[in-house]
Image (cartoon, rainbow, N blue to C red):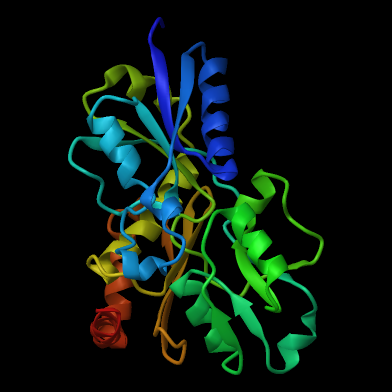
Length: 303
């Protein structure tokens, strides 16, 4: 119990809140820890859309390097930002209990939903689903941490912007002028926090095992398996959501074209005993029904 666990985190308000949540949970179990904040490439470059920067791992690479170099022991991430394949030597140590996975729209006035309008988001998934529902609208790129994006919305003449409900709630920034987008399929693992560690660090792995929430872990692993099977390393507008009960899994996932005009959805229910390969099977159904051709088109468009 003498080891001080060094917790690596991005230095945004939300990331620090997440890291402190893990720190408090570890200290309740009797472990000593300290926070080690760093800036990621994704936080430093706010001028380029994420898909142009090679989005895979853009918010996690800096912490991965720090961990491999021995500068930190564990790292806390928003799980939706974590690549489906972790670097060699780094493993998942705990998935914390998931918060609400939904997206919300922060708006200035909802009248624009009936006609022309503009919204902002840096997410290809949110953009594609919005245009699928509101093809008459314009979508502008919006980058930065939660606080930066809220400020940009305030300072621009957009009608609204899309955010993850969990991120705003965690740092008490959810404004009254918002609506839940229950029709929008969230990003795989949205609302979940992941803690990673080195696979040979038995002390940290054992300490973090106590923080793992099994139902959340099952849900996000199925969603991420769906993502990994569809993507094959390419960024694409993909949504997935799993609900887990005592005995059943409810899955909904979709792949959209970049302009939102095409989409391939899948909904499946399975037994909790059938989780092995469940996300992969759902993805294969999408690929077979036209998704494979669409993925090729998306890769070409993003080249």
